[in-house]
Length: 193
Image (cartoon, rainbow, N blue to C red; front, side, top):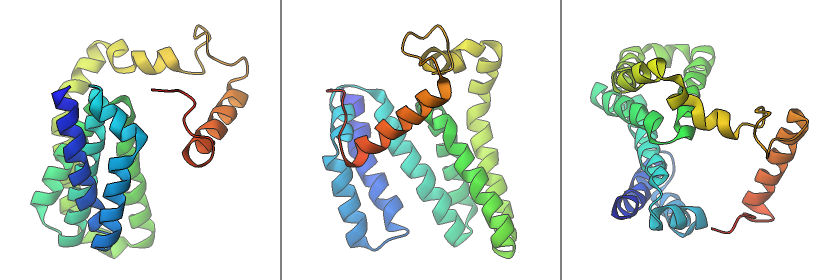
């Protein structure tokens, strides 16, 4: 349990600094307090769920990447890339984080090509460090594919052997999306933890 408490505590700091890069300190402090008081954050950092490490590592990843984008200093991109690699390994949801950066770079290429050009070396360093961090795990996943995708396949609504899977996957995905969106702002989490 101590590890999840440490991750939970440090995630508040990394979240504050990440938010502080783009907002005033008052807004960043308010965001950090909101994270601190979040039911999910309290639950996962108190009860030994190591997926709380995702919040800390991902916040650090965004912080260092954005700091590198602002300063063009390669060391920030390198640490950000290392954090991206760790994010990929921290939790199943971390496998989606690289898509944010790919989307952001596509956006930059289309809208701010000159600014992207001045940061090309840093972005290459970012992805190089991410790949160096992820490569050993990816090698393992290639040898043992179920270790990398087993949990995702097990709980997928597309899995006919999943007793919770709906008969119509598209309708099930739409219903799940609706419940999830309402959970964040209207009805709350229906699963007591």
